[in-house]
Image 1 (cartoon, helix red, strand yellow):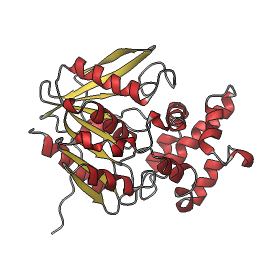
Image 2 (image 1 turned 45 degrees about the horizontal axis):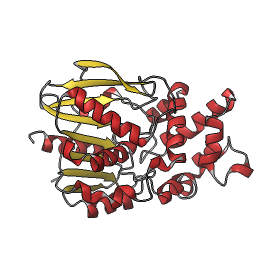
Image 3 (image 1 turned 135 degrees about the vertical axis):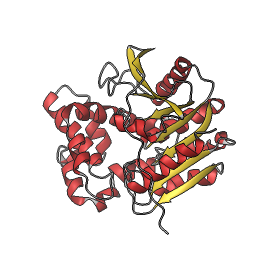
Length: 318
């Protein structure tokens, strides 16, 4: 008998929202959803630079969770927009702690997908005593091999048509290091070149994250305002290896010992090869592991969505 796939919970509005001054000139937007005083959780969005969407609230049972969602530095509703100053992995880890204190909780469930999984692992390995459970989807550990797979050679072989469009803004002489070539344009003074690069960078991701083409993702990633923060921040992070040592998150996974968790990954995830989710699974036996067949990277893929909702339901009583 085929198991019925779970869908998201109905749309919900925040019961509280605001901005938290986190220093360095940054003001981070946050919102709280669900039932005040219920099981605390924090949602970490992807990118870096993507921001939160209302649909992310629906991954949690609003009757059993009190969820804090926030737009990381420089994106979404946070200010200043698309700003790269004092914007690193470790600044964001510190921001999560500030937000935990604002929420007034000792521990919370940490949920992160894609880049959000990277940040969730960095936070949880730094502050394991603050994590009651950990749910990660589309695991990304930012090794050199993962960056090369997506921006040098690998996914290019699966999507040659889209890769050609990704290459288009960059002269042939600069294509040996596309992250660096895009960096020059995304932080340069030529506004037209900056926007062209931002759109090309962002659309490359938007059109390779689902198993089958999705017009909604294409349209969202073609929005110029969204693309500017997404491309600038993501490229900024990847230029610096997200301020992580090679294999740091995998090598320090022993710090997650005793934290219950769930690892959910699509078999055909293009941006984030499944090998690294498998390695995390082996290094962190306290977590369940689901490799979803017939799925790519996006949390909206039916099998991935089902596994994530089942995971948050499973931990709701903890």
